[in-house]
Structures are given as C-alpha cells and as structure tokens.
Amino acid sequence: MENQCDELVECEHFLQHTGINRWPDGTVSSQYSFIHALYENVIYERTGESRKTRLHQSIGERLESAYKNATEEIAAELANHFERSGDYHRALQYLLQSAEKVFHRSAYQEVIDYCQTALALIKSSKNAPPSDEIEMRLNFLLGISLTSSRGYSAGEAREAYSKAQTISQHIGNEIVLFQTLTGLWSFHLLRGEVHNALELGDRMLKLAERTRNADFMLEALMTSGVALFFRGRFNPSQEPIKHALPYYDIDGTGSLISVFGHGVGAVLYCYNARIEDATACFRRAIQIARGQKAKSLELRAAMSLCRLRQSQGKERKRDGC
Image (cartoon, rainbow, N blue to C red; front, side, top):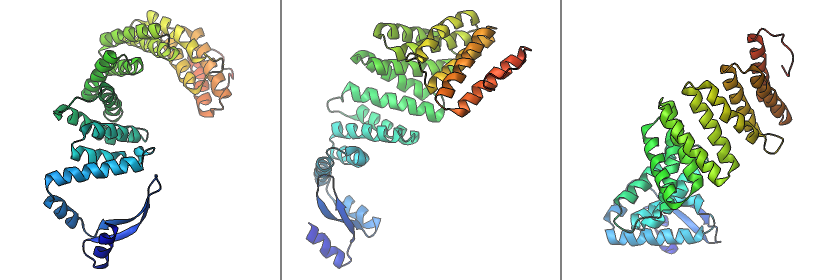
C-alpha cells in the first residue's frame, strides 16, 4: 500500500507526502494527503457502500488498537469511522469520550454537538439499545452545557436533565441523580418557579441524608435556604443555612469555596436583620481567605463587612479592611 502511494506521489497524481506518522503502539508509517479535496470527495463517492462500510470498520479498528490507551486523542475520528460503518455501540462510546474531552476545555457548543449527534443516533438506531449509563452521561453533559451556554432557564437543559434524572434513578447512580436534581433546581428557581425549587431541594436533602454524603448535604441545605429566601420565608431560610455552614469547615481549615458559602450566609442573615450572625460569617470568610492567601477574596469579604458596619451606623474598625 505504501509503495502504491509513493508511486502516485512521484507522478503527482492525487496524493502528496506529508511526513512520518508515529502511532502510540510503536507503528511508524508514511503519511499522505490528497492534493485537492475534490479528489477525495470524488473517489469516496464512487466507492460502493458495502466497501465503504468495511473500510471504515477496518480503519476504526486499526486506529483503536494503535491508540489503545490514548483513544481520547482521536475519539472524534473513531466515532466518525464507527458511525459510518454501522458499529453504533463503538460510535456512541467515542462520541461520549469526545464530548467529555471538550467539556474539560469549556467548549460547550462542541459538547452540545457531540451529545446531540449521539442521542440522535440512539433514537434512530434499530439495533440493540445502548447502555443506560452512556445515555445518562450524554444527557447530563448536554444539560450542563446547555445551561452554561444558553442560561440556567433554557428549556432544552430541563429536558436533558430530566432524562438523565430518570435514567440515573433507574440504574441507581446517586451521584448523577443528585447533580441532575441540582440542575433542575437552578432551572426552576431562575424561572421564578420557587415552589418546584423547594420540592427539588427537599428531594436533594432526603437523598443527602440517605447517602450520608457531606457534599450532598452541604448543597442540599444551601439550595433549601436560598429557595426559602426567594419564597419570602426569611426566618425559615436561616435554619438550613445555619446547618450548612459547618460543612464548609469540615476539615477545620476551610477552602476557597467556603469563602463563597459564608458570603452567601452573611447576605441572607443581613436580609433577616441578623447582623451579628452576618458579621460572624464575613469574619470567617476573611479568615479563610487570608489562610488560603487569596487576597482578592479577602478584600471582597472585608469590604462587605465594612459596608455592613457602615450601614448600621457603627464605628468602622479594621477587621481586615
């Protein structure tokens, strides 16, 4: 095959040499490309369908073998070959891998494209259905990406989260189930559907209590408090916030995210005229930010504390201000 390609290169027919390709499995081969895309398109269109199917499958399997431990590098290429060969199980696997790869680069539109392609393939496939795990992860990634690119109240995001929630509940994946409930909570809260947000917060709290997961408990308590606040139930909103704050400091040192948590708690306390509690939250946020050497967060928390004291007509002191 390589000799035939070299002959076409020498005759300047169709192909040109583009260098040496080294594959992860140690294979070294010459690399070629078409001189013009027109040649590639004409040759491909004139190839019979059955032969194209076999070629795509063979190329996909050879690439998969060569990149055995690094398929994420060429996941999109593998997905294309296996989709065209009709090997939909492998195609879905690599479409999901492609979506996960670009998701970590925050390329949300690409994630949406990969996920929608995969879900359309699932819908149209007449073969055995894919694993619930793959469909769940595709819908979950789609929901997050739609939220990030089109806003928390995007209708398509709700549909994707709902599908992921149904599947995760069916197969018992409590991590994804909790995360989809969080996504749906944000959707309903930002659309002003606070009653639905409260119901979802209650479901999150029950799941957190059942699993005894500290991260779940923190998130569930904070969402419940925020939803109650937006419902106008200011006094009841303080209780879950009060119980949530210790989870930020569960290791005794605090983290950068705990600065945010204490800030939220302080704001809610302010609205409920619980100035001493708000002051304590701001002081703890300053302490944690200082310990983490996060100067900008420390300054922000300190300025908030100064504004609080100023609004109360108290003497301005330098609690980190």
